[in-house]
Image (cartoon, rainbow, N blue to C red; front, top):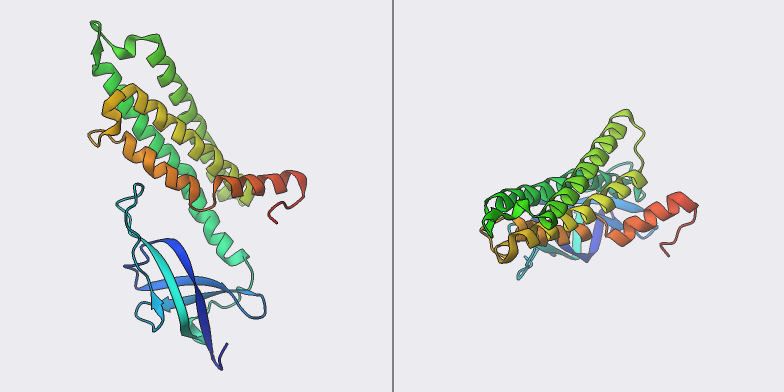
Length: 237
């Protein structure tokens, strides 16, 4: 800290819309060890947000790196009454809850594309949907999607009645994202070589889900959240 102002230094990769945003919310550890939130406006000296290129996932999204080099922020741009990780983590839980639903939606788009294709693709005088192996894939996909939708619905109801905890959200993200990836992969096999083209939505969703597996907390991090809730022991460090 320098008088009434704060001086921020650091960098963070993989920030959605960082290049085009007018204001960035930056969470940083201060000299006294507390966690504070800062509003940093675009154009502030020392603040830059270069765009990340050459992605094969989430290609429609602007993804950026935030770089802060001796960025001076006035005290009125600091979030009041937030001095711990509870602040940023509460935001993350909201985003993770959205992913619980979003993964099901991506998986369902893949399933519906594969189902329609299977009914129309003729092999040996009948649609491939009439073959047992294809029906097994479709049935397993439907099972996973309905499981995921019920999990998301239950988590939403817990959120509404105030009983939702972070480990519940972690379980939802872990299971639904992993399940959606498996659905996308299975749908791709039904489509055959067509599945790797953009004529169908499957490979796009599959590539995007690989990013979803990582962002808003990796699968491994959520595993440790659930593990701590089960055992009472933190294994993060």
